Length: 252
Image 1 (cartoon, rainbow, N blue to C red):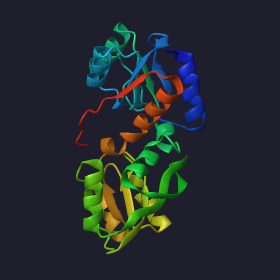
Image 2 (cartoon, rainbow, N blue to C red):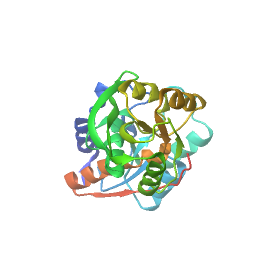
Image 3 (cartoon, rainbow, N blue to C red):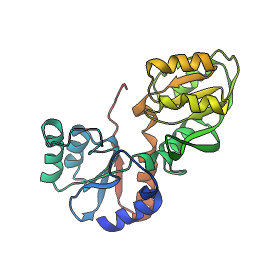
């Protein structure tokens, strides 16, 4: 068992959210019980995840995508009301880290995706004003577009959407998990052969073709499953409490 404030202090020491300008509050978003014996991790604090936390008697939910985004309606109605009502009625804490969990060199989503795909990390760049958000390096070995497709499909258990940039031999790569398709121009400036992210927009296709960068849309959810799992493992090792991961399929 660990006291909530002790856990939060440790998480903040690791992730340093005060160094990042984010689109949502990082850390404790909904206060629950003070003593934490069990944590349930997930990518997004959906109703299904919250219900599962109640079912397994978790004291806290730890996610990458929490609540209270800057652009959303602040009214507590509908779906948001139901989710919050479930957390509050069952005294379950909601803890969320967004950008700090993307950029962390050990527990982050970019770090986790690199491990999953066998990418060789050479460095990080600032993107959209956030330091270390865009990572770059090399593929585990030179590949064709077809081989890259097979590799990503095998590693992530999900077929990606790929737009070829026209290069036959692919070796260098940049990546940023989730909805970071807009960074393809930053990747092109780095001169890489491949850019990997989660989602694709209409203009991403043109950027890929015209700048000779093969773009891989590997899935927002699929690319952001790993940071919260790595963080959960660190919590388990640090405090000796039960930490589980709940996978909720998402085609996006």
